[in-house]
Image 1 (cartoon, rainbow, N blue to C red):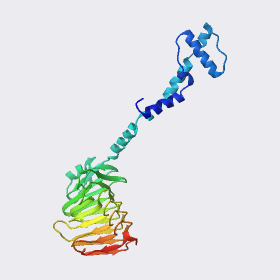
Image 2: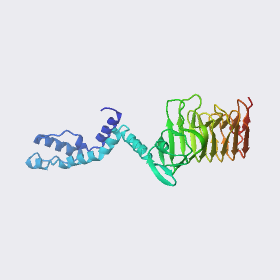
Image 3: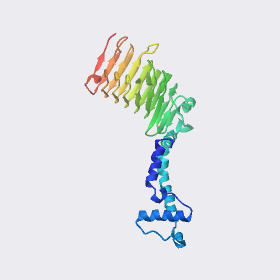
Image 4: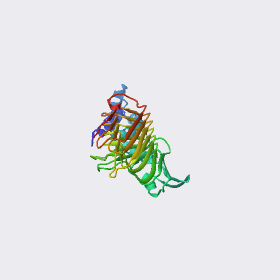
Length: 326
Protein backbone atom coordinates (compact mmCIF):
# COMPACT_ATOMS: atom_id res chain seq x y z
CA UNK A 1 0.00 0.00 0.00
CA UNK A 2 1.65 3.19 -1.16
CA UNK A 3 -0.49 5.78 0.51
CA UNK A 4 -3.72 6.47 2.33
CA UNK A 5 -5.80 6.51 -0.84
CA UNK A 6 -4.74 2.95 -1.70
CA UNK A 7 -5.43 1.83 1.85
CA UNK A 8 -8.94 3.24 1.83
CA UNK A 9 -9.64 1.67 -1.57
CA UNK A 10 -8.50 -1.81 -0.59
CA UNK A 11 -10.21 -1.75 2.79
CA UNK A 12 -13.44 -0.62 1.16
CA UNK A 13 -13.25 -3.39 -1.43
CA UNK A 14 -12.51 -5.93 1.27
CA UNK A 15 -15.46 -4.81 3.37
CA UNK A 16 -17.89 -4.89 0.45
CA UNK A 17 -16.70 -8.20 -1.04
CA UNK A 18 -18.72 -11.43 -0.51
CA UNK A 19 -17.62 -13.37 2.53
CA UNK A 20 -16.64 -16.39 0.42
CA UNK A 21 -14.25 -14.24 -1.60
CA UNK A 22 -12.22 -13.54 1.53
CA UNK A 23 -11.84 -17.17 2.67
CA UNK A 24 -8.96 -19.40 1.62
CA UNK A 25 -9.47 -21.56 -1.45
CA UNK A 26 -8.57 -25.25 -1.56
CA UNK A 27 -8.12 -27.21 -4.75
CA UNK A 28 -8.27 -30.75 -3.36
CA UNK A 29 -11.42 -32.72 -2.59
CA UNK A 30 -10.73 -32.37 1.11
CA UNK A 31 -10.22 -28.67 0.65
CA UNK A 32 -13.53 -28.29 -1.15
CA UNK A 33 -15.24 -30.16 1.65
CA UNK A 34 -13.74 -27.77 4.20
CA UNK A 35 -14.91 -24.82 2.09
CA UNK A 36 -18.40 -26.33 1.92
CA UNK A 37 -18.44 -26.73 5.67
CA UNK A 38 -17.50 -23.09 6.20
CA UNK A 39 -20.13 -21.97 3.73
CA UNK A 40 -22.83 -24.12 5.31
CA UNK A 41 -21.93 -22.87 8.77
CA UNK A 42 -22.25 -19.25 7.63
CA UNK A 43 -25.64 -19.98 6.04
CA UNK A 44 -26.94 -22.14 8.91
CA UNK A 45 -27.40 -25.15 6.58
CA UNK A 46 -26.65 -28.83 7.17
CA UNK A 47 -23.25 -30.03 6.01
CA UNK A 48 -23.20 -31.70 2.57
CA UNK A 49 -22.36 -35.41 2.38
CA UNK A 50 -18.63 -36.03 1.90
CA UNK A 51 -18.96 -38.28 -1.13
CA UNK A 52 -18.47 -37.95 -4.86
CA UNK A 53 -22.02 -36.68 -5.30
CA UNK A 54 -21.38 -34.09 -2.60
CA UNK A 55 -18.14 -33.08 -4.28
CA UNK A 56 -20.00 -32.48 -7.54
CA UNK A 57 -22.49 -30.35 -5.65
CA UNK A 58 -19.70 -28.17 -4.31
CA UNK A 59 -20.05 -25.86 -7.28
CA UNK A 60 -17.95 -22.77 -6.61
CA UNK A 61 -18.71 -21.09 -9.90
CA UNK A 62 -21.51 -18.86 -8.54
CA UNK A 63 -19.18 -17.63 -5.80
CA UNK A 64 -16.44 -16.98 -8.31
CA UNK A 65 -18.87 -15.09 -10.54
CA UNK A 66 -20.05 -13.06 -7.59
CA UNK A 67 -16.49 -12.12 -6.74
CA UNK A 68 -15.72 -11.14 -10.31
CA UNK A 69 -18.89 -9.09 -10.67
CA UNK A 70 -18.35 -7.38 -7.32
CA UNK A 71 -14.76 -6.63 -8.25
CA UNK A 72 -15.84 -5.05 -11.51
CA UNK A 73 -18.42 -2.97 -9.70
CA UNK A 74 -15.83 -1.77 -7.20
CA UNK A 75 -13.17 -1.00 -9.80
CA UNK A 76 -14.46 2.57 -10.40
CA UNK A 77 -14.33 3.15 -6.65
CA UNK A 78 -10.74 1.98 -6.47
CA UNK A 79 -9.83 4.14 -9.45
CA UNK A 80 -11.48 7.18 -7.87
CA UNK A 81 -9.84 6.71 -4.47
CA UNK A 82 -6.39 5.86 -5.83
CA UNK A 83 -6.20 8.56 -8.47
CA UNK A 84 -4.53 11.07 -6.07
CA UNK A 85 -6.01 13.99 -7.93
CA UNK A 86 -5.03 12.80 -11.40
CA UNK A 87 -8.64 12.80 -12.57
CA UNK A 88 -9.20 16.28 -11.19
CA UNK A 89 -5.99 17.53 -12.81
CA UNK A 90 -6.97 16.02 -16.14
CA UNK A 91 -10.33 17.74 -15.95
CA UNK A 92 -8.68 21.06 -15.16
CA UNK A 93 -6.30 20.72 -18.10
CA UNK A 94 -9.15 19.78 -20.41
CA UNK A 95 -11.23 22.72 -19.20
CA UNK A 96 -8.31 25.09 -19.69
CA UNK A 97 -7.69 23.75 -23.19
CA UNK A 98 -11.34 24.09 -24.13
CA UNK A 99 -11.52 27.56 -22.61
CA UNK A 100 -8.92 28.88 -25.06
CA UNK A 101 -11.41 29.71 -27.77
CA UNK A 102 -11.24 31.53 -31.02
CA UNK A 103 -9.60 34.92 -31.45
CA UNK A 104 -10.44 36.51 -34.79
CA UNK A 105 -9.04 39.53 -36.58
CA UNK A 106 -11.82 41.49 -38.24
CA UNK A 107 -11.06 43.91 -41.07
CA UNK A 108 -13.76 45.74 -42.98
CA UNK A 109 -16.33 43.40 -41.43
CA UNK A 110 -14.55 40.26 -42.63
CA UNK A 111 -12.59 37.65 -40.68
CA UNK A 112 -9.02 37.58 -41.97
CA UNK A 113 -7.17 35.62 -39.27
CA UNK A 114 -7.84 33.18 -36.43
CA UNK A 115 -5.69 32.13 -33.49
CA UNK A 116 -5.91 30.89 -29.91
CA UNK A 117 -3.82 33.78 -28.55
CA UNK A 118 -4.73 37.44 -28.48
CA UNK A 119 -1.14 38.63 -28.78
CA UNK A 120 -0.57 36.71 -32.01
CA UNK A 121 -3.54 38.44 -33.63
CA UNK A 122 -2.52 41.89 -32.40
CA UNK A 123 0.88 41.50 -34.09
CA UNK A 124 -0.79 41.28 -37.50
CA UNK A 125 -3.46 43.93 -36.89
CA UNK A 126 -3.60 47.31 -38.61
CA UNK A 127 -4.90 50.59 -37.18
CA UNK A 128 -8.69 50.51 -37.08
CA UNK A 129 -8.97 46.71 -37.01
CA UNK A 130 -11.20 44.92 -34.50
CA UNK A 131 -10.34 41.71 -32.66
CA UNK A 132 -13.14 39.38 -31.58
CA UNK A 133 -12.30 37.29 -28.52
CA UNK A 134 -14.29 34.16 -27.77
CA UNK A 135 -15.20 33.10 -24.23
CA UNK A 136 -12.37 31.52 -22.28
CA UNK A 137 -9.34 32.08 -20.08
CA UNK A 138 -6.34 33.67 -21.78
CA UNK A 139 -3.15 33.48 -19.74
CA UNK A 140 -1.03 36.09 -21.48
CA UNK A 141 0.00 39.74 -21.59
CA UNK A 142 -1.55 42.09 -24.10
CA UNK A 143 0.53 44.90 -25.61
CA UNK A 144 -1.52 47.39 -27.65
CA UNK A 145 0.58 49.77 -29.73
CA UNK A 146 -1.91 50.80 -32.43
CA UNK A 147 -5.51 52.08 -32.23
CA UNK A 148 -7.54 48.87 -32.41
CA UNK A 149 -10.64 47.50 -30.67
CA UNK A 150 -10.67 44.34 -28.57
CA UNK A 151 -14.15 43.05 -27.80
CA UNK A 152 -15.62 39.94 -26.20
CA UNK A 153 -17.85 37.96 -28.54
CA UNK A 154 -19.62 36.38 -25.56
CA UNK A 155 -19.69 36.15 -21.79
CA UNK A 156 -16.69 34.90 -19.82
CA UNK A 157 -13.67 36.40 -21.56
CA UNK A 158 -10.85 36.69 -19.01
CA UNK A 159 -7.25 37.78 -19.59
CA UNK A 160 -4.96 36.78 -16.74
CA UNK A 161 -1.30 37.45 -16.10
CA UNK A 162 0.31 36.18 -12.90
CA UNK A 163 4.08 36.36 -12.67
CA UNK A 164 6.97 36.71 -10.24
CA UNK A 165 8.63 39.22 -12.59
CA UNK A 166 8.14 42.89 -11.59
CA UNK A 167 6.60 45.70 -13.67
CA UNK A 168 4.50 43.43 -15.88
CA UNK A 169 0.95 44.65 -16.37
CA UNK A 170 -1.64 42.38 -17.93
CA UNK A 171 -2.64 45.01 -20.51
CA UNK A 172 -0.24 47.73 -21.69
CA UNK A 173 -1.39 50.54 -23.99
CA UNK A 174 1.27 52.60 -25.74
CA UNK A 175 -0.44 54.13 -28.74
CA UNK A 176 1.46 57.06 -30.32
CA UNK A 177 -1.83 58.68 -31.35
CA UNK A 178 -5.47 57.79 -31.45
CA UNK A 179 -7.53 55.61 -29.14
CA UNK A 180 -7.61 51.88 -28.42
CA UNK A 181 -10.74 50.22 -27.02
CA UNK A 182 -11.55 47.24 -24.80
CA UNK A 183 -15.10 45.96 -24.40
CA UNK A 184 -16.53 43.23 -22.18
CA UNK A 185 -13.20 41.84 -20.97
CA UNK A 186 -12.23 40.71 -17.47
CA UNK A 187 -8.62 41.50 -16.51
CA UNK A 188 -6.74 39.86 -13.63
CA UNK A 189 -3.19 40.68 -12.56
CA UNK A 190 -0.41 39.75 -10.17
CA UNK A 191 3.18 41.08 -10.38
CA UNK A 192 5.43 41.99 -7.41
CA UNK A 193 6.25 45.57 -8.43
CA UNK A 194 6.95 48.34 -5.94
CA UNK A 195 5.78 51.06 -8.34
CA UNK A 196 4.03 51.25 -11.73
CA UNK A 197 2.05 48.20 -10.73
CA UNK A 198 -1.25 48.04 -12.65
CA UNK A 199 -3.51 45.44 -14.17
CA UNK A 200 -4.15 47.86 -17.06
CA UNK A 201 -1.46 50.45 -17.81
CA UNK A 202 -1.72 53.34 -20.28
CA UNK A 203 1.66 54.87 -21.14
CA UNK A 204 0.61 56.94 -24.13
CA UNK A 205 -2.42 57.59 -26.24
CA UNK A 206 -5.90 56.82 -24.95
CA UNK A 207 -7.83 53.73 -23.91
CA UNK A 208 -11.61 53.48 -23.74
CA UNK A 209 -12.87 50.66 -21.51
CA UNK A 210 -16.50 49.55 -21.61
CA UNK A 211 -18.12 46.83 -19.48
CA UNK A 212 -14.78 45.58 -18.23
CA UNK A 213 -13.99 43.98 -14.87
CA UNK A 214 -10.52 44.77 -13.52
CA UNK A 215 -8.62 43.73 -10.40
CA UNK A 216 -4.99 43.42 -9.29
CA UNK A 217 -3.91 41.34 -6.31
CA UNK A 218 -0.59 43.22 -6.09
CA UNK A 219 -1.17 46.76 -7.38
CA UNK A 220 -3.79 49.12 -8.79
CA UNK A 221 -6.55 48.21 -11.19
CA UNK A 222 -6.04 50.87 -13.88
CA UNK A 223 -3.12 53.30 -14.12
CA UNK A 224 -2.08 56.03 -16.52
CA UNK A 225 1.42 57.45 -16.79
CA UNK A 226 1.13 59.97 -19.57
CA UNK A 227 -1.92 58.64 -21.38
CA UNK A 228 -5.62 58.93 -20.65
CA UNK A 229 -8.43 56.52 -19.93
CA UNK A 230 -12.19 56.64 -20.37
CA UNK A 231 -13.89 54.15 -18.07
CA UNK A 232 -17.53 53.43 -18.94
CA UNK A 233 -19.78 50.92 -17.14
CA UNK A 234 -16.82 49.09 -15.64
CA UNK A 235 -16.19 47.38 -12.32
CA UNK A 236 -12.80 48.03 -10.71
CA UNK A 237 -12.74 46.27 -7.37
CA UNK A 238 -10.62 44.55 -4.75
CA UNK A 239 -7.22 45.74 -5.96
CA UNK A 240 -4.43 45.84 -3.41
CA UNK A 241 -3.68 49.53 -4.03
CA UNK A 242 -5.81 52.12 -5.86
CA UNK A 243 -8.76 51.34 -8.04
CA UNK A 244 -7.73 53.91 -10.66
CA UNK A 245 -4.45 55.87 -10.46
CA UNK A 246 -3.79 58.79 -12.81
CA UNK A 247 -0.18 60.00 -12.97
CA UNK A 248 1.62 62.34 -15.36
CA UNK A 249 4.14 60.88 -17.76
CA UNK A 250 7.83 61.73 -18.05
CA UNK A 251 6.85 64.59 -20.36
CA UNK A 252 3.66 65.91 -18.75
CA UNK A 253 0.88 66.88 -21.11
CA UNK A 254 -2.73 67.72 -20.50
CA UNK A 255 -4.79 64.54 -20.49
CA UNK A 256 -8.54 64.09 -20.15
CA UNK A 257 -9.74 61.02 -18.31
CA UNK A 258 -13.21 60.10 -17.14
CA UNK A 259 -15.14 57.59 -15.05
CA UNK A 260 -18.80 57.16 -15.98
CA UNK A 261 -21.50 54.76 -14.77
CA UNK A 262 -18.89 52.58 -13.08
CA UNK A 263 -18.20 50.89 -9.75
CA UNK A 264 -14.90 51.44 -7.94
CA UNK A 265 -15.19 49.48 -4.72
CA UNK A 266 -13.21 47.72 -2.01
CA UNK A 267 -9.71 48.75 -3.07
CA UNK A 268 -6.79 48.82 -0.64
CA UNK A 269 -6.08 52.57 -0.98
CA UNK A 270 -8.14 55.25 -2.76
CA UNK A 271 -10.83 54.54 -5.29
CA UNK A 272 -9.57 57.24 -7.69
CA UNK A 273 -6.10 58.69 -7.11
CA UNK A 274 -4.99 61.72 -9.17
CA UNK A 275 -1.52 63.20 -8.98
CA UNK A 276 0.32 65.96 -10.82
CA UNK A 277 -0.48 69.04 -12.88
CA UNK A 278 -2.36 68.92 -16.14
CA UNK A 279 -4.77 66.16 -15.20
CA UNK A 280 -8.41 66.72 -16.00
CA UNK A 281 -10.81 64.08 -14.74
CA UNK A 282 -14.57 63.81 -14.91
CA UNK A 283 -16.54 61.46 -12.67
CA UNK A 284 -20.21 60.98 -13.54
CA UNK A 285 -22.91 58.78 -11.98
CA UNK A 286 -20.53 56.27 -10.45
CA UNK A 287 -20.29 54.33 -7.20
CA UNK A 288 -16.90 54.96 -5.56
CA UNK A 289 -17.47 53.28 -2.22
CA UNK A 290 -15.87 51.20 0.54
CA UNK A 291 -12.28 51.92 -0.41
CA UNK A 292 -9.74 51.83 2.43
CA UNK A 293 -8.38 55.37 1.95
CA UNK A 294 -10.41 58.00 0.03
CA UNK A 295 -12.99 57.82 -2.66
CA UNK A 296 -11.29 60.52 -4.77
CA UNK A 297 -7.86 61.82 -3.80
CA UNK A 298 -6.14 64.52 -5.87
CA UNK A 299 -2.74 64.84 -4.24
CA UNK A 300 0.97 65.53 -4.49
CA UNK A 301 3.02 67.56 -6.98
CA UNK A 302 0.29 70.13 -7.53
CA UNK A 303 -3.45 69.83 -7.68
CA UNK A 304 -5.36 68.34 -10.54
CA UNK A 305 -6.40 70.88 -13.15
CA UNK A 306 -10.04 70.06 -12.49
CA UNK A 307 -12.07 67.28 -10.99
CA UNK A 308 -15.72 67.36 -11.99
CA UNK A 309 -17.98 65.15 -9.92
CA UNK A 310 -21.65 64.52 -10.65
CA UNK A 311 -23.99 62.23 -8.70
CA UNK A 312 -21.29 60.42 -6.77
CA UNK A 313 -22.90 57.75 -4.60
CA UNK A 314 -21.89 56.82 -1.06
CA UNK A 315 -20.83 59.01 1.85
CA UNK A 316 -18.53 56.91 4.05
CA UNK A 317 -14.82 57.66 4.26
CA UNK A 318 -13.83 55.56 1.28
CA UNK A 319 -16.38 57.45 -0.82
CA UNK A 320 -15.75 61.12 -0.05
CA UNK A 321 -13.60 63.31 -2.26
CA UNK A 322 -10.51 64.95 -0.89
CA UNK A 323 -7.99 67.32 -2.50
CA UNK A 324 -4.51 67.70 -1.10
CA UNK A 325 -2.21 70.48 -2.28
CA UNK A 326 1.53 69.93 -2.51
